Image 1: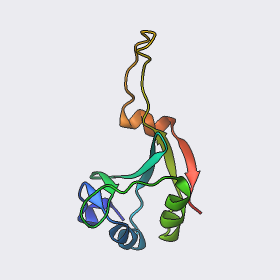
Image 2: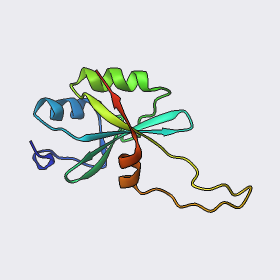
Image 3: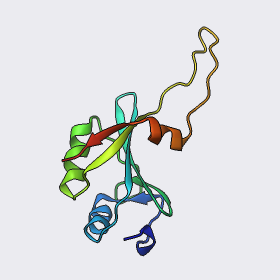
Length: 114
């Protein structure tokens, strides 16, 4: 089922995601690591939604185990682990460029939820 069948915004709760997945929604799941803190983004046909609480605040996790349990429990099987890191080293003058979201997904590590 396409993402157009759902009212998707920039933020989605786990409960809303579970309902959508049970009806056939199949996003690309990105688990982004930021120095040991993880967030979840869902890439779909109409954009990107962050996994959030009921107040719209982005959920953060201290490890991938909890993410695996929660997302695997609602029927999602896998995702892509990406990293939000520095793109250069200003200490020694090494320039860099930030990766685009598409590059991050393409170069991420596939992870399983089940």
